[in-house]
Image (cartoon, rainbow, N blue to C red; front, side, top):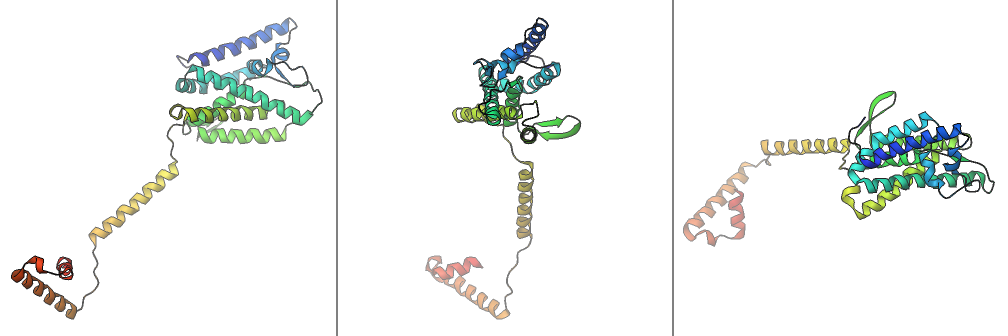
Length: 279
């Protein structure tokens, strides 16, 4: 495990595991904390604290493990770059934004019908973290599980977002996964990053990134330019000159030199000076 985790990242891991253990213990006593603190549809069992508390509740160990594994992997460098306060704000905004998007999806699905729909988990905030990581470190190489091919963070997150979008469309009424809430976490994280970058570009802009294809193309252009310059210096072509033209030019040159000897350089006309230096 990483040493010296920054404070917010470390505390998020601890709090989420405590909440999960509390839900397990409470269930043995007949209390369903996931139902109390999970996000309900706004027309059915909804309370104002739920858009915040739902992101600390998880259904089972695998659910919390994979979410917290992503926090452990990607949150630390973001917090170290921004500072703890900014990172915590970003985490909460991404999670609450995901809740807002999920409510809108439920409204589109159910309308005024009070369906007892509930969602829990930190996935919306985690997807916000993934987006922020790809935003700040776009060229960092990542490996997909079971596919040992390095993919840049930028491409990885774009692929993940596309998969979530189509999975959400295909399973909007049958899947227990809140795909659009995940995308909502990314979207609200993106909006916050745009605002912060407007205020402080140095901290919230991505690291310098340049396409490898662009770098390769610029190198090829520079090689061609150098080859062209070398050919120009090695070979100097002149238009062929006839013997009569050469004799006439030599006669003009001798006349100009005689004029300089008798009257000085200043007596030359501009045309004569041009001919002299052209020679």
